[in-house]
Image (cartoon, helix red, strand yellow):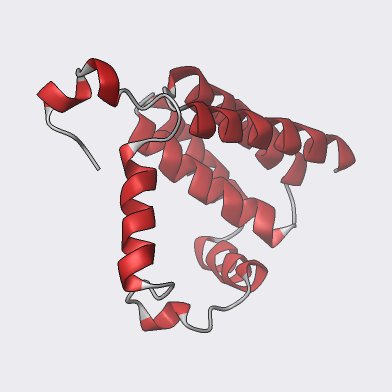
Amino acid sequence: VDLPEELKQHRYLQPLYGCPTFAVQSILRRYKGWYDGNPTNIFPSPKPAVAAEVVALVGGVEPLIERARQLAESGELKDIQLALHLLDFVIDHSGDSLVEAYQFKARLLESRAKVEVSFIARNIFRAGAALAQEASTKG
């Protein structure tokens, strides 16, 4: 969701608490319900099962971690978000490189928090980073 520039700059419309994306998602949920329109999501496979298939397809967790590194190096938020999704496949797979994936995820979440204006999103990123860092110490 991207507001026109004149609305983004308006003093009273700054996304300090929530953000436009949260508002649009709430409106869609209200009028559309829980179903997102994709039949696959009615009875989704467990995340670890999906992750195992993706990990097997790409030949292990290392290609996923390497691609996440490449994406993160761009510094663009959209690429960092994609990198987070790839790391979640590694984490949900719960196989090799789990500590590395958690530590990397924590760093990426901290980087997202540093540039996030929304109070809620910023703190969710920070809390997620703390949880990922904690999980990395448990191996």
